[in-house]
Length: 239
Image 1 (cartoon, helix red, strand yellow):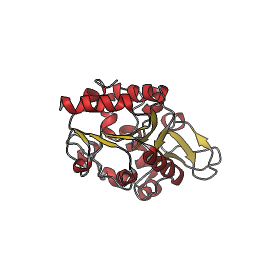
Image 2: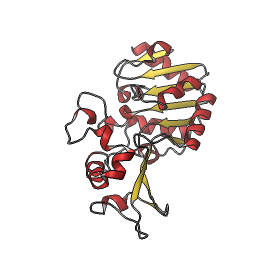
Image 3: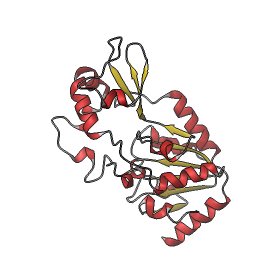
């Protein structure tokens, strides 16, 4: 496995158009739990399954209960960028990183300093009124009781993609362009089981696909470099 990490390190040094495609495993080392592991959110017990609570229809029909769960389980505002976030920010500063395509909604890539970030599932830091579309910061959610409302009377909704909702077209287009332009695509911390996000890997036609994940994924056989370790352990050894 160390040989695979060294091979990836050598490629990082030579590459000029790196794209990183990441999932929940990027942020678990910052203390943000994932969804699908044994201790993940989907294995915890609630009155409704998390997939139901985090759906568009549940938000519309049981908004107060949605926000009780959302504030309790989806907001980790004390989390800080870890070595993976920081290394990616370094590569962008060095002009080596084409972009980050993330399934995470925590904003830690931007907090680390990255600007070329395509947030497929939105961000907790952006919120908007469902009636007049006024934009609100995260403060409007955390400093309100029950259902947060706009001055116009409309309900404030987080700009995150819920179940039953589609991805943002502009974000998807930008992510696909970045992947198409990449010479090295590093996929990390994702089970590659969530679609349509996982399907974006089909647009990669570059030289090397590196896949870093603790457990097996459906794309393992497609990887040129396969490393089954935690991201922090790997990125701590990259230039």
